[in-house]
Length: 133
Image (cartoon, one colour):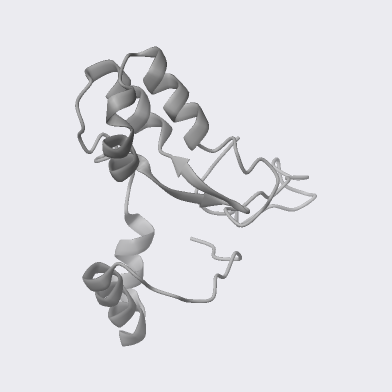
């Protein structure tokens, strides 16, 4: 089972317990949440698209899990291989409920952080892995 946020009511008396929590900072399974660059470039070669490596990197690289960087969005890469066209395939594939709630309900500091992230694309902050929705 996978999810975006931790299950907030896990206990020995619930129907869901004994979970192994793996987050984006965990080294466990760090290469299985997306495609590695090596895997993507190999697939591009198999599809006769080796000349488009930098295009695909620009569009779909950018995830980090554990100590692994250059993890590619698998949904987007698969769609690119199928369509042979760059597009924001990830759009409308999830909800932004947590971000929406943070902007509406949190203090001004979180709004300033979002503005900075949207403006420069760089935000350094401490990560709290115990966030519950």
